[in-house]
Picture 1 (cartoon, rainbow, N blue to C red):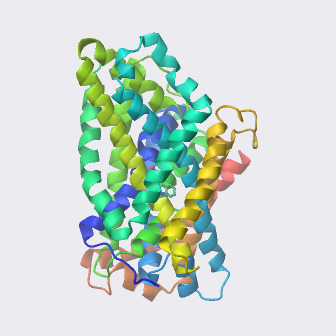
Picture 2: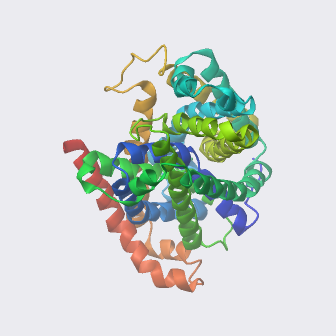
Picture 3: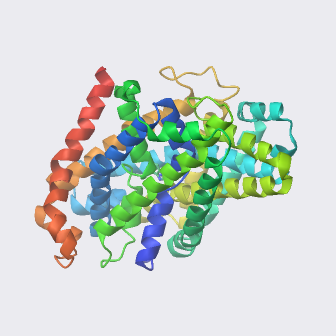
Length: 453
Ligand code: TRP
């Protein structure tokens, strides 16, 4: 077996983790969840879940990953050999691959939109044509599958290049650029005529729309957005060097992810209102809204609008890639370390499997639209199953593992780097309490209310 690679620096760790966290979850999923679940009130619920329920799970995963220096399956075998915990390891190998499959479909849409932007399709179309773009495209057969394939191949290529050259090299360069771009776009969007309604929508909470589903969706969004509950962060943490600070990486990643989502909200929502689109429009929200804006902008300045459109879709694409590679890496770590496969074969196996499931998801917007699983299309079913159930369930088990199965001394040692990090020592009891009680009880309560209300 090849020796394990490590991320080269603290900056690289945070960028890789933030790269995993910041993705379509922030730019595509967050705005439409906000629109479906009542605006600012949802944003508040999402922030609360992120820090109270989900951040402790970030610590749990990093503690397990760095202590064991193994992917999820190996970690369980190493820290709790011969126990049923290995099933948690296995479960968390499968679910990111399922997420990857439908994630790649949305990644494909951003590839398509990038092409369209580059061909000046948004700039030159009649405003009336623009409205139909998205619906027409996703319900067709060949086009979405073709771009899904392109996206999947890009992901496979980066993962194939390895942890240091591939993942670290790519995320270290792209993440900072991404932050600058999204801020610029938010500023632009907020100056559009009619944008103020969107700004109010994001800032003024109306709790009358909040129900059990909104609470569950907020928690699901927090898990999805921080890439937690399936061992992605665990696997990345296994490449962290011993002197890295778990508290700082967790807070750094969570804050960047949250900021990014909120800024993306400010880039999208004002434009939604300015364009007169319904905020509850669902998965197509971002893709419906932006072309409209680019088109409108194009009237006065066609080139400028095309350039901004291209930058935006490159941004989405890069953000999606840095997340998708983290999903694939979980399975690759498992197949190479536990099954002795070569990296190339592991990448190939996962790519083929996720591609096939992705094709079904893609077709569920068109030819397979009538296939319903518990009342949802295949795509929505997988997304809801993963975000609202599998991720929180995986997260719950990870906190239980750290809080109740590992010894307090080991957790302390890992969290504080053997007692050398003063702030971590001071905060340890708070984190320990969150890990053992607050996060598990909170997740169970959200589960139960969602089931029975
Ligand atoms: N967090 C990423 C996003 O916001 C998606 C992601 C990457 C993810 N790895 C994950 C989601 C693992 C769930 C589980 O786009």
